[in-house]
Length: 430
Image 1 (tube, rainbow, N blue to C red):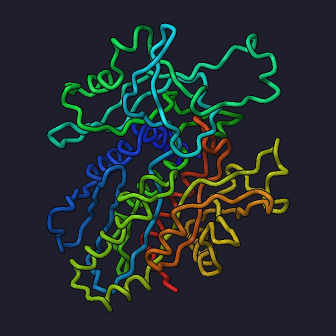
Image 2: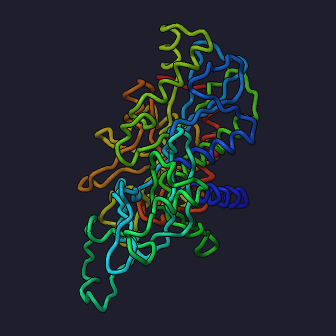
Image 3: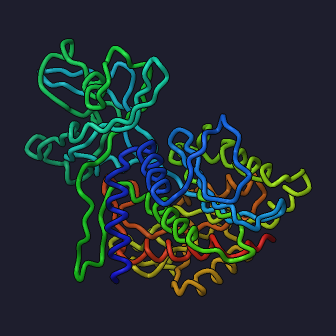
């Protein structure tokens, strides 16, 4: 448990430093640079020398290790995850309010469990771009709250809470006349920016409660944004571990942490966009690869799509498959769906089983109840775009898409252990 506790506390620190996708990418970059990775800018020529590198594009991060003996046909071992989480995004002209309250105009981002966001102190975080084109990270600290109506004013609330996204998800942040207040200016001041210099902004709400280990014998971990910072953090830990080795015949290890998965991934920094393909092509270019070499390298490559999954809920067991009941601390999930909402097939399952066996990690299968629609991940998108064999895995959670989710203390470290093995093991291809 000592390794698991060390990992889980570091995960808590990573989540706390990452209230938005932009912060998650920046904190990942900070950790990589501290370990000797070199940040590259996309507008510059990529180096041909072996080494450890990373690129940040908006709220996404791609990092890789180019081994000494890599050639034009060397395969890639790619870990795909995502940096964003369900939330509420600040609208244009966000300062509003009535009856003496200052409120914020927000738009629902993704599919948050709305009731879980009530009565929590929320930060406003993300980026502001000034008129000179510079990007500034913003984290206001506790500022917003969605106050719930008292039970005295709605005696039937416990019979079924209905929340309208426009009428009820309208947070307060102060008192006064909205005509004399400026929420965006307050966020700018928190980042040391002159409000007059604001050119654009991408700001979201995030829970500010400290992550905590809890439960009998410290079995559980509660935090915001575990979907999917558990996977991003495990990927970082695995990649940093892989960077310390020099085994011959290693694949090119790649961590791809995309943005916008919760809203469909259709962006320049999302998994449906060109980011990963751009970087892989440029890496191959530094190795002198032609088209035939690139196709051979992709055929020898493998992708693990790591995203959060569902543990069986003891109070809602009928919503789960009757035979497959993943539990917290039972090991990471192998996610399976007949309709390819997850990409796992027999080859992928076998490769995952080998990796877990070599890492000494137990794993569990997850499949949906036939009557409950199955979610999806970046796995099918990556497999479709690049033709790389892909398997879907993840850490089991309860309260997924809540403002505060829950996992087992042991599972995130186990996932990182498997990924550290994945990054150095020769890719299996087809």
